[in-house]
Structure formats: C-alpha cells, structure tokens
Image (tube, rainbow, N blue to C red; front, side, top):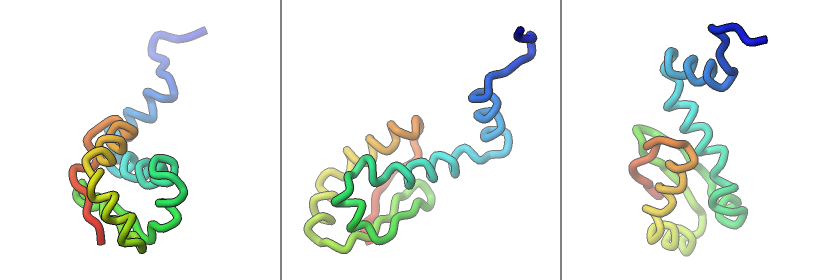
Length: 96
C-alpha cells in the first residue's frame, strides 16, 4: 500500500542528482560509458583517450583516416550523444 508521500526510486535519484548538483557529471559519465556502443567496436578500439571538459568532448584517435571520417559527421555524433543523455551535455568535439 502506497502512502501519499511515497516517491519512486527513479524520482528520488533524479532529485538527489539535482540537489547535489551531480546531474552534469552523471550525464558526462554516461556518455563516456556508452561511447563504444554508439560508435561501434572498430572506432572504440582505436580511441585512445576520451574525456569531457566544459561541454567539449576531447577524443584522441590513433587512426588519421577514422579521425577524418569523424570530423565529417561531427554534428551527427554530438546529436546522438546528447539524445542519449537527454540534455545538452556536449556542444563541441575536439580531436587530439
């Protein structure tokens, strides 16, 4: 039997992330974790370093051919990653 002040676990965690201002970092970590699934194993295996700083996604890729292909579809990748996060987490991609 539910009481009137009961809250679902999802709502409670969401509220906790907002109260402690952890939402942005949580979304950034989720994007970094989902990178292999979104980009595929071929690109994920060649990604040497990936991190987010000030809404910019920094990526170090060992293959110049793959790097050039990713530069061409940069906006599509940003849209996919932001759609997965559910908010505007990334505004720019920078290749190192």
